Amino acid sequence: MLQESTDENSLSDEQLETILIDSDDEITIIGDTPLKLAEGYQLDIKLIDTNGMSLDLTKNGEVMDSEIRSPSKPGATMADKIY
Picture 1 (cartoon, one colour):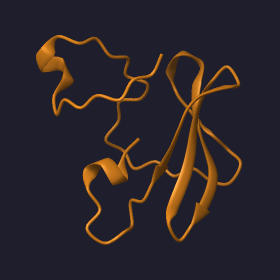
Picture 2 (spheres, helix red, strand yellow):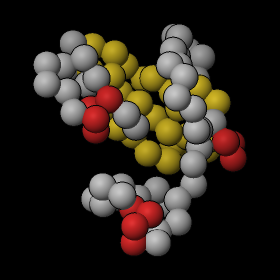
Picture 3 (spheres, helix red, strand yellow):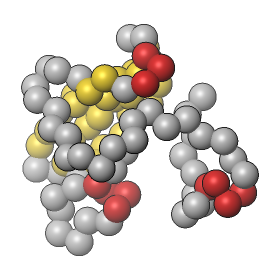
Picture 4 (cartoon, one colour):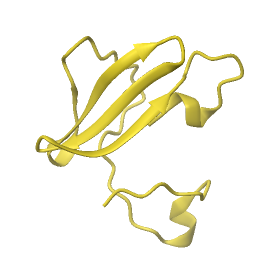
């Protein structure tokens, strides 16, 4: 199951994690076209408004996690910019 880490470097505590995408490229998700990830996962934008965007992480059609991100807000932190 998905779990959010409070560690700045979770690997320092020898935790195993699954990398679903490993790229420094800028990626744009358009409309109803989800971003396909590894192992049957995909990232869907559910809503975009002035407060940010609502994202669903699904695996084989089942919602595994939902998050709201606000990458454009003033003073946005790295946590606001990435999922």
